[in-house]
Amino acid sequence: MLMGQYSHTIDPKNRIIVPVKFREELGDKFVISMGLDGCLYLCKNEEWEEFLKGMVDKLPMNKDAREVQRFFMMNCQEVEPDKQGRIIVPTSFKEKAGLDKDVVMIGSFNKVEIWSKERLDAQTSDKNIEDIVETLANEYGLKF
Image (tube, rainbow, N blue to C red):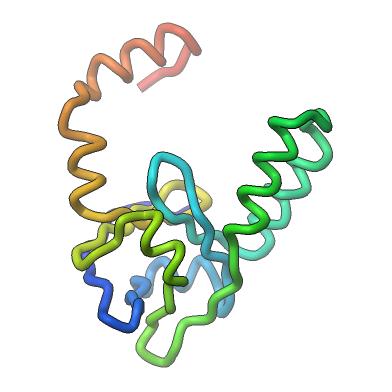
């Protein structure tokens, strides 16, 4: 399981260090993709393939489903860390995710989210997590 939070920087050559704990879980090669909410995802190849297969198998073949499939298929790439544990973030991904210098990597169960520190701070600063958890717990019967 991928968990924890790590702060890093992205260098002028679009390289970012993937923490050892994440690399151990992700493997020698893995997928980087555009994510949701303005972040990037890192996933094991197998997890990514399962995700895409699930979309093909379970989503109806309507315009919205095709658009979602297209979004994820055109915004993913296999990456391999160098000897220093760095990967190269494609320029278009870097721009779309607003990665400038300071980045935060968050383990999120079966994937890693890569956030611009500023964007992550803006995402989380206005929310009261206790209220959100209480609402979800009541609605879905979750126990914390």
